[in-house]
Length: 369
Ligand SMILES: *Cc1c(COP(=O)(O)O)cnc(C)c1O
Figure: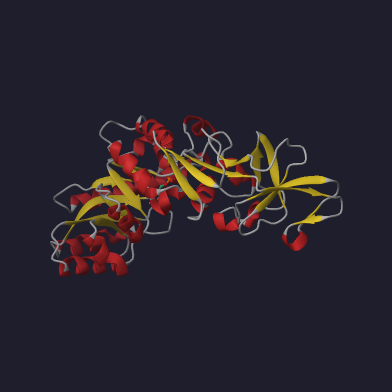
Protein backbone atom coordinates (compact mmCIF):
# COMPACT_ATOMS: atom_id res chain seq x y z
CA UNK A 1 0.00 0.00 0.00
CA UNK A 2 1.56 3.39 -0.95
CA UNK A 3 2.03 5.70 2.03
CA UNK A 4 -0.50 8.47 2.38
CA UNK A 5 0.32 12.16 2.02
CA UNK A 6 -2.87 13.49 3.59
CA UNK A 7 -5.51 12.47 6.16
CA UNK A 8 -7.52 9.60 4.70
CA UNK A 9 -9.83 6.81 5.82
CA UNK A 10 -9.09 3.76 3.70
CA UNK A 11 -11.90 1.23 3.35
CA UNK A 12 -10.75 -2.28 2.50
CA UNK A 13 -13.51 -4.17 0.67
CA UNK A 14 -11.46 -7.38 0.80
CA UNK A 15 -11.64 -7.23 4.61
CA UNK A 16 -15.40 -6.71 4.34
CA UNK A 17 -15.72 -9.86 2.22
CA UNK A 18 -13.63 -11.75 4.78
CA UNK A 19 -15.82 -10.60 7.69
CA UNK A 20 -19.04 -11.34 5.82
CA UNK A 21 -17.87 -14.87 4.96
CA UNK A 22 -16.70 -15.48 8.53
CA UNK A 23 -20.02 -14.40 10.06
CA UNK A 24 -21.99 -16.24 7.39
CA UNK A 25 -20.07 -19.45 8.16
CA UNK A 26 -21.67 -19.34 11.63
CA UNK A 27 -25.20 -19.45 10.18
CA UNK A 28 -27.40 -22.23 8.89
CA UNK A 29 -27.52 -22.11 5.08
CA UNK A 30 -31.08 -20.79 5.01
CA UNK A 31 -30.62 -18.07 7.64
CA UNK A 32 -30.78 -14.68 5.96
CA UNK A 33 -28.16 -11.98 6.51
CA UNK A 34 -29.11 -8.36 7.11
CA UNK A 35 -26.20 -5.92 7.02
CA UNK A 36 -26.58 -2.86 9.22
CA UNK A 37 -25.20 0.10 7.24
CA UNK A 38 -26.52 2.93 9.43
CA UNK A 39 -24.34 5.94 10.26
CA UNK A 40 -22.45 5.81 6.93
CA UNK A 41 -21.83 2.09 7.45
CA UNK A 42 -20.33 2.70 10.88
CA UNK A 43 -18.34 5.70 9.74
CA UNK A 44 -16.99 4.21 6.51
CA UNK A 45 -19.01 4.77 3.32
CA UNK A 46 -22.51 3.30 3.19
CA UNK A 47 -22.82 3.41 -0.61
CA UNK A 48 -19.51 1.64 -1.25
CA UNK A 49 -20.27 -0.90 1.48
CA UNK A 50 -23.84 -1.57 0.31
CA UNK A 51 -22.71 -1.93 -3.33
CA UNK A 52 -20.04 -4.42 -2.33
CA UNK A 53 -22.46 -6.36 -0.12
CA UNK A 54 -24.85 -6.59 -3.09
CA UNK A 55 -22.10 -8.40 -5.02
CA UNK A 56 -21.95 -10.85 -2.06
CA UNK A 57 -25.72 -11.43 -2.37
CA UNK A 58 -26.68 -9.75 0.87
CA UNK A 59 -30.34 -10.43 1.75
CA UNK A 60 -31.25 -7.20 3.52
CA UNK A 61 -29.83 -3.86 4.59
CA UNK A 62 -30.77 -1.68 7.56
CA UNK A 63 -30.29 1.99 8.35
CA UNK A 64 -31.45 4.00 11.35
CA UNK A 65 -33.20 6.87 9.57
CA UNK A 66 -35.11 7.34 6.33
CA UNK A 67 -32.55 9.84 5.05
CA UNK A 68 -29.84 7.18 5.15
CA UNK A 69 -32.02 4.86 3.07
CA UNK A 70 -32.70 7.60 0.52
CA UNK A 71 -28.93 8.05 0.08
CA UNK A 72 -28.62 4.35 -0.77
CA UNK A 73 -31.59 4.38 -3.16
CA UNK A 74 -30.15 7.47 -4.90
CA UNK A 75 -26.95 5.47 -5.44
CA UNK A 76 -28.86 2.65 -7.12
CA UNK A 77 -29.04 0.15 -4.24
CA UNK A 78 -32.02 -2.16 -4.86
CA UNK A 79 -31.78 -4.57 -1.87
CA UNK A 80 -34.67 -4.25 0.63
CA UNK A 81 -33.82 -1.68 3.32
CA UNK A 82 -35.23 -1.80 6.86
CA UNK A 83 -35.39 1.62 8.54
CA UNK A 84 -34.83 0.89 12.23
CA UNK A 85 -35.92 4.17 13.75
CA UNK A 86 -38.21 6.09 11.40
CA UNK A 87 -40.31 9.11 12.29
CA UNK A 88 -43.86 9.72 10.97
CA UNK A 89 -42.64 12.91 9.25
CA UNK A 90 -40.75 10.65 6.80
CA UNK A 91 -43.38 7.97 6.12
CA UNK A 92 -44.30 9.39 2.71
CA UNK A 93 -40.63 9.37 1.67
CA UNK A 94 -40.25 5.86 3.04
CA UNK A 95 -43.01 4.59 0.76
CA UNK A 96 -41.85 6.62 -2.26
CA UNK A 97 -38.32 5.22 -1.95
CA UNK A 98 -39.32 1.60 -1.18
CA UNK A 99 -37.89 1.65 2.33
CA UNK A 100 -39.40 -0.62 5.00
CA UNK A 101 -40.20 0.86 8.41
CA UNK A 102 -39.71 -0.65 11.82
CA UNK A 103 -43.04 -0.17 13.57
CA UNK A 104 -42.27 0.27 17.25
CA UNK A 105 -45.33 1.85 18.85
CA UNK A 106 -49.08 2.25 18.49
CA UNK A 107 -48.58 5.86 17.38
CA UNK A 108 -46.18 4.80 14.64
CA UNK A 109 -48.46 1.94 13.56
CA UNK A 110 -51.48 4.25 13.25
CA UNK A 111 -49.54 6.93 11.39
CA UNK A 112 -47.95 4.48 8.98
CA UNK A 113 -51.23 2.78 8.15
CA UNK A 114 -52.85 6.12 7.47
CA UNK A 115 -50.02 7.25 5.14
CA UNK A 116 -49.99 3.85 3.38
CA UNK A 117 -53.76 4.06 2.85
CA UNK A 118 -53.46 7.61 1.50
CA UNK A 119 -50.80 6.38 -0.91
CA UNK A 120 -53.13 3.55 -2.01
CA UNK A 121 -50.66 0.88 -0.92
CA UNK A 122 -51.49 -2.81 -0.63
CA UNK A 123 -49.45 -5.20 1.55
CA UNK A 124 -46.68 -2.64 2.09
CA UNK A 125 -43.90 -4.50 4.02
CA UNK A 126 -43.43 -3.45 7.64
CA UNK A 127 -41.37 -4.90 10.48
CA UNK A 128 -42.84 -5.03 13.99
CA UNK A 129 -40.35 -4.35 16.77
CA UNK A 130 -40.83 -5.77 20.27
CA UNK A 131 -39.14 -4.61 23.42
CA UNK A 132 -37.86 -7.63 25.38
CA UNK A 133 -35.70 -5.84 27.95
CA UNK A 134 -33.54 -3.21 26.26
CA UNK A 135 -36.28 -0.69 27.03
CA UNK A 136 -35.39 1.53 24.11
CA UNK A 137 -37.89 1.01 21.26
CA UNK A 138 -40.64 -1.50 20.68
CA UNK A 139 -44.07 -2.80 21.59
CA UNK A 140 -44.66 -4.75 24.75
CA UNK A 141 -45.84 -8.32 24.93
CA UNK A 142 -49.33 -7.20 25.89
CA UNK A 143 -49.64 -5.04 22.76
CA UNK A 144 -50.06 -8.08 20.48
CA UNK A 145 -53.86 -8.01 20.44
CA UNK A 146 -53.94 -4.32 19.67
CA UNK A 147 -51.46 -4.68 16.77
CA UNK A 148 -53.24 -7.66 15.26
CA UNK A 149 -56.65 -6.00 15.43
CA UNK A 150 -55.27 -2.83 13.90
CA UNK A 151 -53.66 -4.86 11.08
CA UNK A 152 -56.83 -6.80 10.40
CA UNK A 153 -58.60 -3.52 9.71
CA UNK A 154 -56.39 -2.61 6.73
CA UNK A 155 -55.06 -4.18 3.53
CA UNK A 156 -52.42 -1.46 3.15
CA UNK A 157 -49.62 -3.13 5.10
CA UNK A 158 -48.30 -6.64 5.63
CA UNK A 159 -45.91 -7.80 8.33
CA UNK A 160 -42.63 -8.90 6.76
CA UNK A 161 -40.89 -9.63 10.04
CA UNK A 162 -41.15 -9.57 13.82
CA UNK A 163 -38.00 -8.62 15.65
CA UNK A 164 -36.35 -7.58 18.88
CA UNK A 165 -32.91 -6.38 19.97
CA UNK A 166 -30.57 -7.82 22.60
CA UNK A 167 -29.25 -5.59 25.37
CA UNK A 168 -26.04 -7.41 26.36
CA UNK A 169 -25.30 -10.16 23.84
CA UNK A 170 -21.53 -9.52 24.09
CA UNK A 171 -21.50 -9.98 27.87
CA UNK A 172 -21.29 -13.61 29.05
CA UNK A 173 -22.15 -12.46 32.60
CA UNK A 174 -25.54 -11.42 31.27
CA UNK A 175 -26.29 -14.75 29.59
CA UNK A 176 -29.37 -15.36 31.79
CA UNK A 177 -30.78 -11.97 30.89
CA UNK A 178 -30.13 -12.55 27.18
CA UNK A 179 -31.69 -16.03 27.25
CA UNK A 180 -34.69 -14.52 28.94
CA UNK A 181 -34.98 -11.93 26.16
CA UNK A 182 -34.87 -14.73 23.59
CA UNK A 183 -37.54 -16.75 25.43
CA UNK A 184 -39.76 -13.70 25.81
CA UNK A 185 -39.40 -12.96 22.09
CA UNK A 186 -40.28 -16.54 21.17
CA UNK A 187 -43.41 -16.44 23.31
CA UNK A 188 -44.51 -13.09 21.83
CA UNK A 189 -44.06 -14.27 18.26
CA UNK A 190 -45.83 -17.54 18.95
CA UNK A 191 -48.88 -15.65 20.11
CA UNK A 192 -48.60 -13.16 17.22
CA UNK A 193 -48.27 -15.85 14.55
CA UNK A 194 -51.21 -17.78 15.96
CA UNK A 195 -53.38 -14.78 15.09
CA UNK A 196 -52.11 -14.35 11.51
CA UNK A 197 -52.68 -16.55 8.48
CA UNK A 198 -49.12 -16.05 7.23
CA UNK A 199 -45.63 -16.34 8.80
CA UNK A 200 -43.44 -13.25 9.14
CA UNK A 201 -39.67 -13.76 9.49
CA UNK A 202 -38.18 -13.61 12.97
CA UNK A 203 -34.89 -11.99 13.99
CA UNK A 204 -33.18 -10.93 17.22
CA UNK A 205 -29.38 -11.36 16.86
CA UNK A 206 -26.84 -8.59 16.34
CA UNK A 207 -23.16 -9.44 15.78
CA UNK A 208 -22.49 -10.70 19.32
CA UNK A 209 -25.81 -12.56 19.23
CA UNK A 210 -24.62 -14.36 16.08
CA UNK A 211 -21.44 -15.38 17.88
CA UNK A 212 -22.79 -16.22 21.34
CA UNK A 213 -26.38 -17.39 20.73
CA UNK A 214 -26.47 -19.70 17.68
CA UNK A 215 -29.78 -21.11 18.93
CA UNK A 216 -31.34 -17.68 18.34
CA UNK A 217 -30.35 -17.04 14.72
CA UNK A 218 -33.96 -17.73 13.65
CA UNK A 219 -34.83 -16.59 10.09
CA UNK A 220 -32.37 -13.70 9.83
CA UNK A 221 -29.51 -12.04 11.72
CA UNK A 222 -28.55 -8.35 11.77
CA UNK A 223 -24.85 -7.61 11.79
CA UNK A 224 -23.09 -4.27 11.92
CA UNK A 225 -19.88 -4.12 13.93
CA UNK A 226 -18.72 -7.61 12.90
CA UNK A 227 -18.83 -6.69 9.22
CA UNK A 228 -16.61 -3.72 9.99
CA UNK A 229 -14.10 -5.96 11.79
CA UNK A 230 -14.83 -5.93 15.52
CA UNK A 231 -16.21 -8.85 17.51
CA UNK A 232 -16.56 -7.38 21.01
CA UNK A 233 -14.16 -10.02 22.35
CA UNK A 234 -10.46 -10.82 22.08
CA UNK A 235 -11.10 -14.21 20.46
CA UNK A 236 -13.52 -12.87 17.85
CA UNK A 237 -11.39 -9.82 17.09
CA UNK A 238 -8.68 -12.25 15.97
CA UNK A 239 -11.02 -13.75 13.36
CA UNK A 240 -12.20 -10.43 11.96
CA UNK A 241 -10.38 -7.74 9.98
CA UNK A 242 -11.04 -4.04 10.59
CA UNK A 243 -12.06 -2.62 7.23
CA UNK A 244 -11.11 0.99 8.01
CA UNK A 245 -7.62 2.46 8.36
CA UNK A 246 -7.28 6.06 9.46
CA UNK A 247 -4.00 7.57 8.30
CA UNK A 248 -2.44 10.99 8.24
CA UNK A 249 0.95 12.69 7.94
CA UNK A 250 3.32 14.82 9.99
CA UNK A 251 2.73 18.45 8.99
CA UNK A 252 5.45 19.97 11.16
CA UNK A 253 7.92 19.02 13.89
CA UNK A 254 8.66 21.29 16.86
CA UNK A 255 11.42 21.27 19.43
CA UNK A 256 9.99 22.18 22.83
CA UNK A 257 12.31 23.39 25.56
CA UNK A 258 11.83 22.46 29.21
CA UNK A 259 9.18 24.74 30.74
CA UNK A 260 7.39 25.52 27.47
CA UNK A 261 3.80 24.51 26.91
CA UNK A 262 2.03 22.96 23.91
CA UNK A 263 -1.43 23.73 22.55
CA UNK A 264 -4.59 25.46 23.73
CA UNK A 265 -5.02 26.26 27.40
CA UNK A 266 -1.32 25.44 27.67
CA UNK A 267 -2.56 21.99 28.66
CA UNK A 268 0.83 20.28 28.17
CA UNK A 269 3.91 21.46 30.06
CA UNK A 270 7.29 20.08 28.92
CA UNK A 271 9.20 18.89 31.97
CA UNK A 272 12.24 18.27 29.79
CA UNK A 273 13.31 18.83 26.17
CA UNK A 274 10.72 17.29 23.84
CA UNK A 275 9.98 16.94 20.17
CA UNK A 276 6.38 17.12 18.98
CA UNK A 277 4.74 16.45 15.64
CA UNK A 278 1.61 18.29 14.49
CA UNK A 279 -0.87 16.07 12.62
CA UNK A 280 -3.75 17.36 10.43
CA UNK A 281 -6.65 15.68 12.23
CA UNK A 282 -8.67 17.06 15.13
CA UNK A 283 -11.95 16.97 16.97
CA UNK A 284 -13.81 18.13 13.86
CA UNK A 285 -12.63 14.92 12.23
CA UNK A 286 -13.83 12.75 15.11
CA UNK A 287 -10.75 12.57 17.31
CA UNK A 288 -12.60 14.05 20.25
CA UNK A 289 -11.05 15.85 23.20
CA UNK A 290 -11.26 12.72 25.35
CA UNK A 291 -8.18 11.46 23.49
CA UNK A 292 -6.10 14.47 24.55
CA UNK A 293 -3.65 14.88 27.42
CA UNK A 294 -1.75 11.65 26.92
CA UNK A 295 -4.70 9.25 26.76
CA UNK A 296 -4.91 8.67 23.01
CA UNK A 297 -2.01 7.87 20.66
CA UNK A 298 -0.96 7.39 17.06
CA UNK A 299 1.77 5.28 15.43
CA UNK A 300 4.69 6.73 13.49
CA UNK A 301 7.20 4.39 11.84
CA UNK A 302 5.82 1.61 14.04
CA UNK A 303 6.23 3.50 17.31
CA UNK A 304 3.56 4.77 19.63
CA UNK A 305 3.29 8.55 19.99
CA UNK A 306 0.90 9.85 22.67
CA UNK A 307 -1.26 12.90 22.01
CA UNK A 308 0.01 15.84 24.09
CA UNK A 309 -2.22 18.61 25.41
CA UNK A 310 -5.71 19.32 24.16
CA UNK A 311 -7.03 18.04 20.83
CA UNK A 312 -7.64 21.07 18.55
CA UNK A 313 -10.41 21.34 15.96
CA UNK A 314 -8.12 20.54 13.05
CA UNK A 315 -4.94 19.21 14.64
CA UNK A 316 -3.33 17.09 17.30
CA UNK A 317 0.20 17.32 18.61
CA UNK A 318 1.99 14.09 19.55
CA UNK A 319 5.18 13.37 21.42
CA UNK A 320 7.92 12.06 19.09
CA UNK A 321 10.94 12.72 21.32
CA UNK A 322 12.20 9.14 20.92
CA UNK A 323 10.87 8.43 17.44
CA UNK A 324 12.99 8.62 14.33
CA UNK A 325 10.74 10.53 11.90
CA UNK A 326 10.51 13.59 9.68
CA UNK A 327 7.93 16.00 8.31
CA UNK A 328 5.79 14.32 5.63
CA UNK A 329 6.07 10.86 7.25
CA UNK A 330 2.95 8.72 7.46
CA UNK A 331 0.95 8.54 10.72
CA UNK A 332 -1.38 5.64 11.59
CA UNK A 333 -4.28 6.51 13.89
CA UNK A 334 -5.77 3.02 13.49
CA UNK A 335 -5.62 0.17 11.00
CA UNK A 336 -5.79 -3.62 10.84
CA UNK A 337 -2.96 -4.08 13.34
CA UNK A 338 -3.27 -0.89 15.40
CA UNK A 339 -6.87 -1.46 16.29
CA UNK A 340 -9.43 1.29 16.75
CA UNK A 341 -10.77 -0.71 19.71
CA UNK A 342 -7.46 -0.21 21.58
CA UNK A 343 -7.49 3.53 20.95
CA UNK A 344 -11.13 3.65 22.07
CA UNK A 345 -10.34 1.76 25.28
CA UNK A 346 -7.47 4.13 26.10
CA UNK A 347 -10.05 6.83 26.55
CA UNK A 348 -12.95 4.94 28.06
CA UNK A 349 -15.04 4.37 24.95
CA UNK A 350 -15.76 1.55 22.47
CA UNK A 351 -14.93 0.69 18.84
CA UNK A 352 -18.48 1.58 17.75
CA UNK A 353 -18.03 5.16 18.92
CA UNK A 354 -14.62 5.94 17.48
CA UNK A 355 -15.28 4.49 14.02
CA UNK A 356 -18.70 6.11 13.61
CA UNK A 357 -17.28 9.45 14.77
CA UNK A 358 -14.87 9.91 11.85
CA UNK A 359 -16.48 12.92 10.24
CA UNK A 360 -17.36 13.46 6.62
CA UNK A 361 -14.47 15.92 6.29
CA UNK A 362 -12.03 13.00 6.20
CA UNK A 363 -11.54 11.76 2.65
CA UNK A 364 -12.65 8.16 2.07
CA UNK A 365 -10.53 5.98 -0.19
CA UNK A 366 -12.04 2.68 -1.28
CA UNK A 367 -9.57 -0.18 -1.69
CA UNK A 368 -11.29 -2.71 -3.94
CA UNK A 369 -11.31 -6.38 -3.13
C1 LIG B 1 -27.22 -1.12 15.28
C2 LIG B 1 -28.15 -2.27 15.38
C3 LIG B 1 -27.72 -3.58 15.05
C4 LIG B 1 -26.27 -3.94 14.76
O1 LIG B 1 -25.61 -4.26 15.95
P1 LIG B 1 -24.07 -4.73 15.96
O2 LIG B 1 -23.75 -4.93 17.40
O3 LIG B 1 -23.30 -3.59 15.36
O4 LIG B 1 -23.99 -5.95 15.13
C5 LIG B 1 -28.67 -4.60 15.01
N1 LIG B 1 -29.97 -4.34 15.32
C6 LIG B 1 -30.40 -3.11 15.69
C7 LIG B 1 -31.84 -2.92 16.05
C8 LIG B 1 -29.52 -2.04 15.74
O5 LIG B 1 -29.94 -0.82 16.13
